[in-house]
Length: 235
Image 1: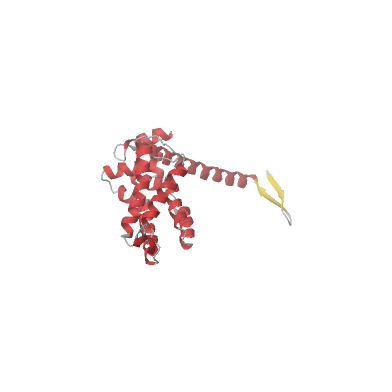
Image 2: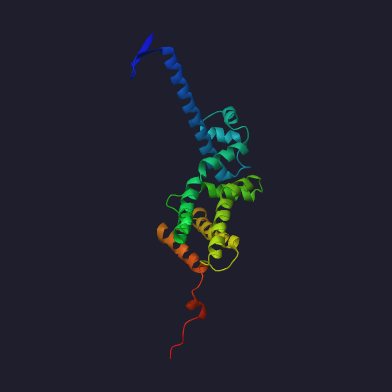
């Protein structure tokens, strides 16, 4: 059987067998991607609930509705699966790109707001935070992998930005790394309270971010000569 379609310059023919083979290959690739996504999702939920050591590949396979052999086909080790979870659920390139844009403009408020908003947002998935806590408590090497891909990126970048602004005289002199840790620590503590311990919010996410950023920047900014001298006496 021959199938035909009209191209811009001629009538082209192709065997239906070729079409079927290409379609089957496309469907196969899609199915493989879906299975991998399903395994990553199931593993992330289990790791976040039971920890890395407390989760078996058999449980992951059952949660994903596949055989354990299929788990090993796509992810030979649990470590490989954990790495895939980080790559899937922790994409930072877009955020870093956005932050760099405002960093070049020396828009301090926007830089800190973007970072805080990325962590404090409506419907934020606590899975990654739980994974970090479990991997650290279990003393697993994956804690270093997680920290390197998630938090060190922010620490190093923010510390570099703060150092630059200190050199330019916009921020007062202090240890840039400690300042960066202080800001990220404030945001992470907020997430621990509300996403792990379930403390209810008493204001909107936007208000929370704005308050944290204002408090922190007010502590960073260099005082004006008038402020350094202190208020003048009223006579």
